[in-house]
Length: 531
Image (tube, rainbow, N blue to C red; front, side):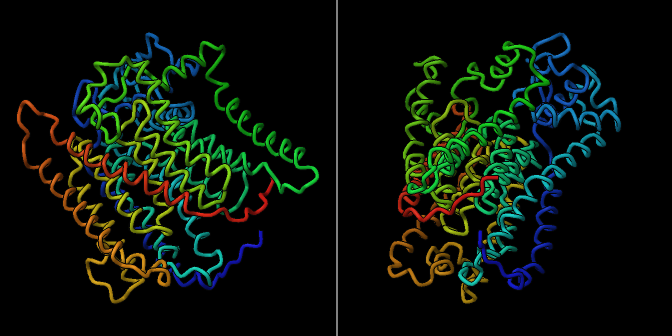
């Protein structure tokens, strides 16, 4: 596609690239040394036990019954509620676990199994999955970011080594996957690969394949589905003056459709023999019985529930319809803008805006799903470092009640300080005269990105002041949640305050990122590769 690159420029920063990756991996291993979700907490334990139990079920029961309630598979005890690729992943890990330590996946007898060897095995499965899916995608995206038109790139945040370490050291993903214990790195890694194939390679077939795989690993990837659908649909249109416009559109659209349908058939075929099986899997993936929310989560419904008890007024079915309508309305502006004024920068911003609309307004949101917003924000960080960094701090803070419950407060504080330190180092590289606290100055940050475009610093100084007070509020709430015991009549005081505080930030960020997307004019769109 005529993309300019300069290997010599990449050689300037590659010396710091691999030490940065090794450090990020070392941080993951340190966090993994701390407790996990459900550690020594019978009878249900937590997410660690859920992942272990899925290995037990997939290894010892036929695939057709993985999502069905049977005498061997009690769905009330951590029944599978993620799509088929998660089940296949559990099955492969279960085979290895059965070979290493059969007791760890023995049917019924292994519930609550917490042997040290098995815990090490489970931690390593997350670590290896992270490297293969997420770390590899981050590396490719950041290398491409620096090598494209390097003479025009003055932004220090687009340096490969800095970009990689700021993406890999985001505390939220490390704490949830390597601390709390999940495999978000797989679905988010596949999402990152799909994004890479769009913004770098421009191969829409591979992008579609990777995104369908991500969606079939975790259904929460629906948060990103609308921007992908709209961008890929727009890629089917060619120049309006082209003679065979309709034929080309149909041909390209059919190719993408074949990819999507083929992937779904291949992935779902081993698990279904009738429509009843399909309905059962869908029922497991989207349970309405859990209600609009469970724990205190930083979205609009939990915020509103402080004043209006939604669960007492509306049924689950009514709330689901309200949530669906609100989510569609909140994400519509970004989707319409992306469709009519499509380009790659708008695509990344639309990923942020639509996923944030889902987080704020959709049904049955977990605190961990803020990661689906945070990763697109991290991708946008080189273009808007101050606001994206602020969002990433708040997103990590919003999960604090969960991390305290898991005994991960030390890793939370440590990884947050490390992330802030590396962000400050990045600013120092861009502005050698910057002080230690330069990250609190929006003017200092933006001067390293757009040095010739800043004329009025009053707004940026006000923004810096707001950021400072925001950070002080997060510090105060963190200390309160750690050391001040709430009154017996308000047992959820600190989780509620944290969720309300975070939600107020997310609403403002939602308005801000939508405004930023609308500000970007439509750029000439390069003709996509059709293979």
